[in-house]
Length: 496
Image (tube, rainbow, N blue to C red; front, side):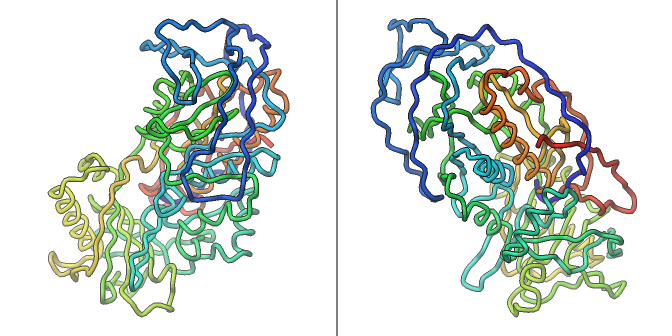
């Protein structure tokens, strides 16, 4: 989700049951993790050596070819390591004080954790961010000036009353503010038209990442581990064991996958959650290049029409779909430093120039940067080579930027494997849809914990078909459709 918007949600959800084997009622080994206030460390919680519990499927484990577990006890694999996964079916009761592991600290994962706490459920959020939480709510600050760039999500709008209530609280707390700058469409050649009848546009006061870091600041039942890249999920005896490169990171009564792309697919490949893995693999994502550029002198924008803008959806340019002046957006007239611009590519340009984002060849980076700066010239109607040379540039590839298809449901949940998925792609491509998805899954899991004896009723989205998703290359915005495109708004309703 590079930016934000979402649908009004009014239609009902459909539950689709699994067909698991008959469950046994064997007791489970329960270990309670102590929770403290959020922390940014990635150290593992200490665990005593557990006593040997009865196996979850009621069968006695065999010692032949059994591997030594990283958790200090022999472990019989629940899954047969074949090309086809077997469904994990936890038969042990849910404890009175369950704990949820949330993999992904973007908007969906954070709101899932926040709403689990509201329902009295503890959780731990695992995030890979080195500088902070947020996922694609990314902000880069370059000292000493400083230069500041939102390099993924650019702004968001509000249409759902539940999200509106959250945003109002953030606004009252000084975390977000309305973006008063002019935003519109910029045609190839420099013709700019402001968006009319546009709903309020919101930005985080100090950049999107700082909003993400603040969401859990007042929580008492949520732990945060970062930077931490969960690389393996192992089901054993009614719990999920999480690890990072062989190092244990805790055990949980349920798990939430709050990120997507190839890393999430690898994580789910042998997890014992075939239906969830299948749905995740059906997701199609675009690739978007982000070019951050600082200019010592103001960039001439829409000189032909005498209009000035701070953000623009670019039309008719192959390499650029969006451009925004982050200095004006975030600092207004309070800054006398360079103007910091974020340029985002089109999805087609991202696909044509896609490379492994962890290892971008220098030649590719130079070619993409030159192509995007030429696209800026074309968009502004400048002659080739007349754009002032930026004093600072940085290029980043978002290899899993935006969804191009969606199941159109708030969340996915497998009650037998006690695992769920949340994210913007389940409802659209926006910060609002991500927030509503995380909220929905939190309520769904909390309801399941209260009624674990009827799992069929809690299976959700495991067979839902996907439909194409349309919108701007940088996301969806209710009430901000382009003059040439009016997207039909789908209506859904979240579980309460």
